Amino acid sequence: MLRLLADFGLVVLIWMVQLIVYPGFTFYSEEHLLNWHKTYTPRITFIVAPLMFIQMGIALYLCIFDFSTVHLVYLILVVSTWFSTFIYFVPLHHNIEVNRDLKSSANRLTKGNWIRTIQWTFIFIYGVIWLSS
Image (tube, rainbow, N blue to C red; front, side, top):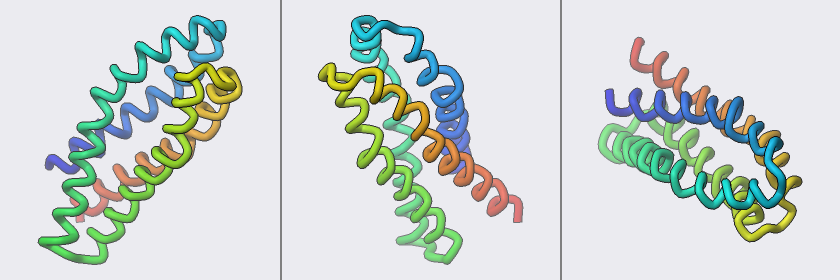
């Protein structure tokens, strides 16, 4: 149940970020975007990080203590979200944080975030199907 709760929390959060937060960056001047981003990032991290760690912890636990192909696929999906987050999205947030290519980085966040939106949506649907079978 905790797994489904974490998956659901992340899918709701990513859809809000994709449809509301990142597109909202376009309404800020570069100066205001820089200031808002410095406020926004720690706040969203406070919500996202625990959910991601819970999700990863559950995926690892399931693979170690109750190994199955279903659990391995879940772990691979979760690892893929971490990979895309830290390889692609964290550097873009860093660019904004240090005032480098603000508008370009914000646009790349919005367009590229569809990857994580699809990933976390699929993880949630996969979990619902697995739990209901």
